[in-house]
Amino acid sequence: MTTFNGASASLGTALSGLPRCAVLSRGRGGEPRLLVDAPAGSAEIYLFGAHLTAWTPRGGKPVLFLSRQAVFDGATGIRGGVPLCLPWFGAGPQGTSRPRHGWARTMTWRLRSVQTTAEGGAVALLTLEHDSLAVMYEVEVGQTLRLSLSLRNTGSSPRLVEAALHSYLAVHDVTACQVTGLEGAEYTEGSVSGQVQVGPLQVRGPVDRVYRSSGTVRVTDPGGSRTIVVEGLGSPTTVVWNPWSGSAKGMADLADDEFPRFLCVETAAARQDAPVLEPGQTWSLGARLYTESL
Ligand SMILES: O=P(O)(O)OC[C@H]1O[C@@H](O)[C@H](O)[C@@H](O)[C@@H]1O
Image (cartoon, rainbow, N blue to C red; front, side):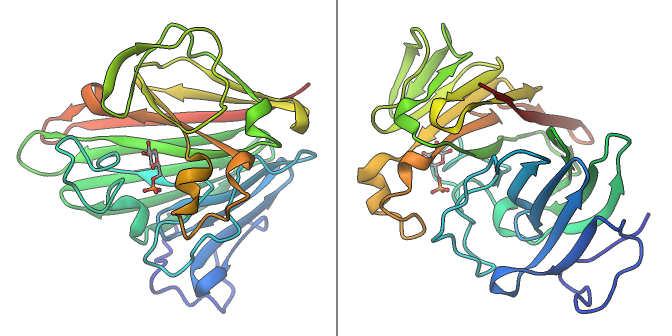
């Protein structure tokens, strides 16, 4: 297997072992990033955070939102795309863990390989070993986006792990969107737990809900003439988030007019549904995203 170390790769020179549809170069802020331009779709993945910042299925429009004020300084989590939250979600089970959403999104991962797929796409494999966890992350780019996270507890004691594939879905107007697939699911918002989703979700204000749901979520966006479908694999939790205007004002990496342009639908395992991994145990979480025309 070809190994590329994102921190030390000589990015100015041609690298052997990458298929013709993939280039590893320096992106914004001089950060190493993989560009994929395959027959079935294109994408951009920063090694910092193994952060997918763009995915466009061939013939379609970009599916992921990226803030025009996103920071690429190799220290700040990137606002948009698909941040990878691990090994805790938010401030973690005790509410005291830092950095928010875990260390995985602010560490530089190793790009291990890029391979083409029979469907005209490409799959990138990234890895990270830290804090007694060995993590593998596969990003398969094509007409469909497949994200597969797999981790092993390399420590000697059981540990609770939270994870989220925090996708920022690009929409024309979040207030016009209809979100289905969560009906009947129990959720927590803020400190209020035990609430139940009645009917489709419509976002007309700030939303930050942690659903106990593994169902497929469909975001129908009439202005974008499409439905974005998010299917979780091995994911007991779905988080839906939009900061709305009030919180957006306090976020330096999100412009004031951007909050209506995205909805986060996060494929996750968090809170009471987070797994406890025994020493040596492997666990995985995945998501499949695709669009349907209206
Ligand atoms: O600003 P961050 O750390 O990227 O987090 C963004 C949001 O991420 C969501 O997953 C959380 O549910 C929100 O509470 C949080 O505000």
